[in-house]
Image 1 (cartoon, protein in one colour):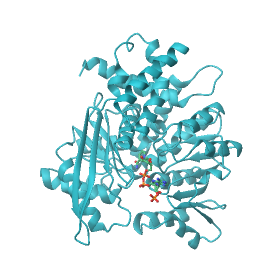
Image 2 (spheres, helix red, strand yellow):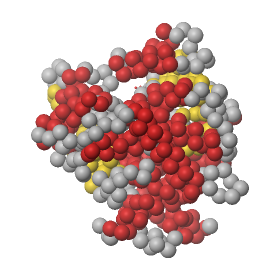
Image 3 (cartoon, protein in one colour):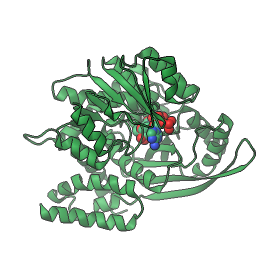
Length: 450
Ligand code: NDP
């Protein structure tokens, strides 16, 4: 035991030395190292191959200037990135994030997690991530378009349908994907499946916008079924009110659960009657079309309450689904959730729970699903969009939704395979990390030292 701790510590110290001032990246690597290194040590084929050390080093990192002109004709300068992390099992695949907090550490953690997540989907996709510190909030549509065009004018030389296929993430939705795709098409003079999350009339897949949120709820349903429960009648607390939160809410409603909260960076709304289909439509209009704040909800539905600058984790619930951003649920929030009887946590966002919070959930036998397993539905349907683009064919909603459900169920089974141990609750963190590792590591071993 002591020897294992020493090996892990030594590995992390070596990685840390090369990646100083990258706390989010080190957090993601630590979580993987703690569960995967003991497995590597127990397996002759992986031991001594330095595979994890190779995996934490991106295959390529691109950083570039994005200059653009705002509506006041002033020149603005942002920084763009693309992290091409691992292409052992397929071309790089992962979203673009536009948010002022974006930096190398955040994108490297996201790219690293993406490698494992994409492997779990069983589709042939490597891992990558990119974005910019550009803030689309408060910008006009034409400013967003000019920024996207400038961003793509550099990015286009690094990506391609068989090379690297970006998608959306925080701050990059249908509007941004449209502008990015338009500029790529103009520069390359080709209509190809270089981005996913496209509009349905120009190469997008049905169910792609819904896929991450629906997938999280399918995964939670699998966890509940495995312990002889279901979603019906359960109370649910959700954070965020963007793409993932909206469709997680929709699927919870469809499956008979009661969603009590949603939030954004200004605070959360609490609706004791539950957010129903009609109220959700209003939120979608508010956030996606009018681009307003979630607080407007209580003007429309005065029985609901708005809590400024607070997160929703103090609200009593059976299930918590964090869908906003990394490290939004801290150990004190986890304590309150557990005290209030929350028994299930499924991550919609990437790494929304801090390491201490995750450990507390596991110690207290809360069913806890890490994002790399539970939010993999988005990239899975992106993979299906790529397949449809190659076939030059479109599958129906029912077909795509059926495949999504099957993929989430398969990911759940993979977690059980490596995360079950007699007499203990399933450890989904261990299960997801080892299952993702095995697939990528086997491909890397077969391909030699490259
Ligand atoms: P959106 O931009 O659509 O929505 C993000 C939501 O989170 C908004 O409500 C936003 O509020 C809130 N938020 C963002 N940053 C913060 C912050 N620092 N503090 C509090 N609230 C914040 O993004 P998505 O829904 O697409 O993504 C949400 C999460 O899900 C991210 O972690 C992303 O990586 C992950 N994810 C997304 C996938 C996808 O398919 N879109 C796939 C897999 C994971 P505000 O508007 O005030 O900023």
